[in-house]
Image (cartoon, rainbow, N blue to C red; front, side, top):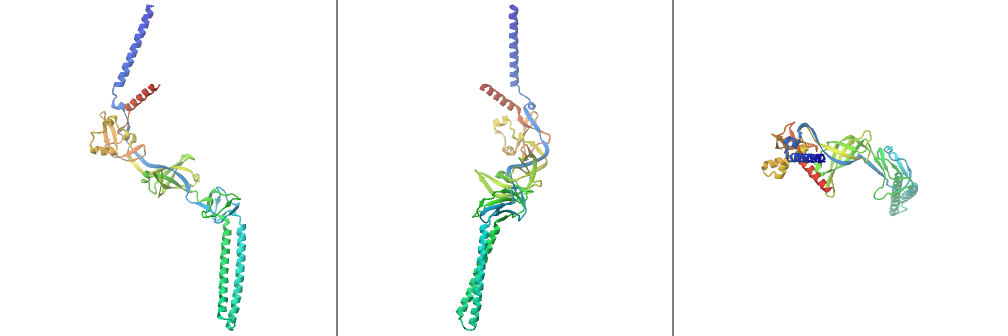
Length: 392
């Protein structure tokens, strides 16, 4: 029994020693001050190429998209073109029922014949009256009336001929022809459907003139449009080919703004070559316009420009000079010098959202700059862990 109690006492003492040792270790670990190399995570300043871009979404459209309509009303009688058909200029696309127009033409032809007969009669009467006037059998008034009848008959004939020409033209309009060579991308009518020509001409077909040359109509925010110029290179992707990148060129920045919920955007037109015709009208394009490029530039990670030690944040940089404040507005990075943070004011140029170009400042290629305070991250993680423990 005594041996058993002795073993229990030794085990208890052993557990107490372990608990004290663990507590001492955790107390030491939490209170010791890590070295600057352990505390701060750094990344190197490098030399390299950098490209600045602005991004937006757009829609692929044909450069020339012609809407084919009709100038006369009628019922669709025949269709000669369908979706995706290639058509030539002047090719027949469809026919309307021309029965009424044929009847109108015949009526106008009859009116012309009647007017020609009336003119012939008036001319004959004028000739006889002229002979009788020469022989003094009729008065000058009779001759004037006969000649006036000839002119009136001629005017009626001209009117009948004009009406006939109009009716023949309307008859010709019952045959709808393609105004350009291209591809039918839309057809909005079917056989038997009635189309009515009114103040707004109905659209029957839409024809893309040449799908080998397309354009992207994209909307860029006013904050970005100031950096866009005609002729700048463009890279874009589409959902249909997510692993393939396409190129284009900025052709036009349209001056007509669009305002939606107080957001102003401008239409930027991008010219796209499509020799394989794999890009289709209506596809969504994710556009990146290259606004600036630098070769062999001094580059610093953007995380270094965002980094600010908590000591400086607590003090609010109250002891900094006015000139240094202007430098901070331009950009500030921190380097480790003699195991201490050194504040370096820099001027930045273009950025690709990962790195920024350094235009001026006491930095050299290969020099490490601070990008993160690991102690601050650990404290936040520990605080988060304690918060989770309290929740559970």
